[in-house]
Image 1 (cartoon, rainbow, N blue to C red):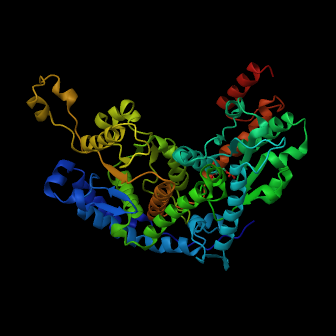
Image 2 (cartoon, protein in one colour):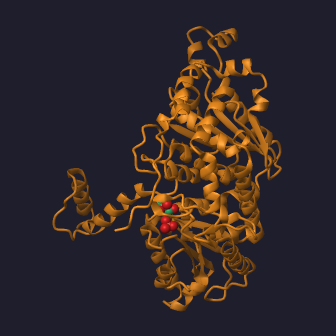
Image 3 (cartoon, helix red, strand yellow):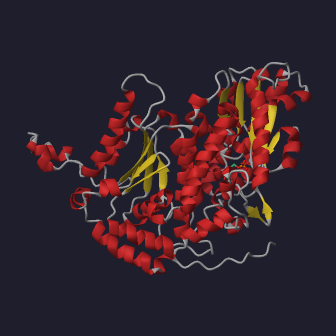
Length: 550
Ligand code: F6P
């Protein structure tokens, strides 16, 4: 039995005067339209925006007044966001439920920075691992690393799930223009065998390198896929166990488990318990990213992360991009009653960005108790979703424009294109700007009738507007820019979690499902004499068994 850590009681948010003042204030702001806000405050388009790190962060189309922002900032200060931020950067064990530091920021700290956990500076180890990864990545990229039969590696398959998959998979898509030609990365995450099958059916095992990425090296899906990969690979080499060393690497915190699996510890890249899974794409979990874009590209990405870390750490909250993003998100979620957030990148390379953010945000802040275990009486994490524009415009935007639910949107776009194929970039940019304009200002019945639309049709064409959005306009996508964007969201999530008083760094909610699945596995095989689940689950197991002839 572990002894209970000393956790300070958390002042419930709804007892804070700043919160109560916002509740009253929200009654007034809810009746205001963005048309009025822009009319009454003509400078807000320029002034409710932040310029930093080649990003123009425009939150003027959010349904906030300047007074709202002051009140939200006062709430953030009262909740100790800055003190908690400083505690994270200092290496304090702010993940109290797991008694761990939260130091993804150390993964991108430049050499020479000192960040201590239990009195030990962790930055030198971070750089040792980066150097080891770089040497390995260079060997694979140059072809010096040979497979069992002497062929060079053409495909790298990352096997992992959750934080050990989503970040590297997102980065592979995002950074394709920087990837080495002739070297492809693929990702197998689902325990559904279709995933493994489809990702390997056209591959030559002699040219394939598997990276088994798992912090714990016990995750059911990853271990099942890893064993299947081992069998697939060994079969091609006549069962020669020596081939494993040439075709398998591991990224993990669990050296013993890696050894047990049979991977040469020389091909293992470590990280630490102070790196949460969903905050790990810039650790050794990003090995596939480094192999794709090269050590320099990876270090550029880390530099981008670090720049945003520094912005978050040192900029007053009033001009702090992640902090303001978090405050606006909290306002929409709690005070305007918006349950979701659509993240809409106008950049095809960010195809998987929203999926990545789903874990980052929802696994972090999808919590119902404060740090001290008290149940919250306020809303926490929104549902995060989205996909790249302009495709989404022809799918779900109708609902965002005219539906009965208010969906705040984050639009992400870049000024410069990566390829010059005519006027696509202008068309893309015109679309993203048009969407946020239409959402904010809409079109009134009067305007529509003024265009000669008959009265019976006009109501169908009314766009009420007053739909909030933030536009994040970057100069150009690059590894560095990707790092900045991911860190922007990491720290936004941090800010929101700090105000809600939840632990953004544990994830107990996913455990029960894992435990129950382990119990059901033998039952599907027909071995359990008696099923002791609820009536529905029992019936489903019996139907499955019958259809499988068991
Ligand atoms: O889904 C729960 C979770 O623990 C995530 O937090 C984590 O990213 C994922 O599983 C994978 O865990 P591991 O890296 O240990 O295989």
